[in-house]
Image: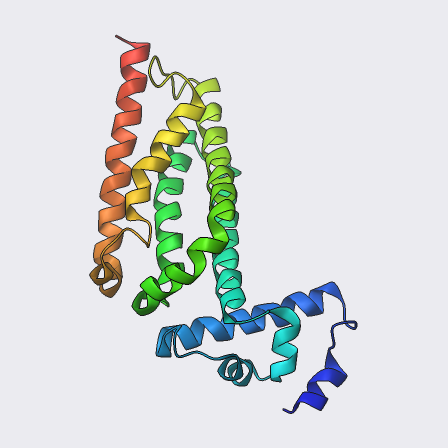
Length: 224
């Protein structure tokens, strides 16, 4: 498909928002495949356009360069994590079950998003870190709000209750996020990406341990 054909289908000034979003996602999908097979450093914008089946000029309508593409991949990955956590938080399951599932999902969703870039992790983080510091704070805050909501639900229903120092849902949520940060993609070993099932078991053990701590605190508060 040549550039002229691409422009007849879609240009910067034509097409609906949905069309533009679809094309953006097509480019991000292509970037994930290229990074997985060849690494971030070897990927070029020409490679990306070819993999996406579009012209190079069309690619530049959506992204300034490959660094901007990398940011887009990370942004979409975090949006997926938040969407998944929100679905669990909004479900009608008991708060303790929602909390356990969210602890596991937070780690595993980030893990799966990073697996395609596991061989380029250092390269990608070197590129991304200067551009996403403020965004990381926003994403973490959004995750914390969802955990706070579930913890507050459990507190209202008598399933969670705390005393000092864990005397608020906000404090517990922040503590749980800090406890799981050690299993985020930039903190784990590269070899962890080679055995997803073994990593899942580690995540389940950590979530079980954290839940026992929360539930013990609740029992000690209710029945000291």
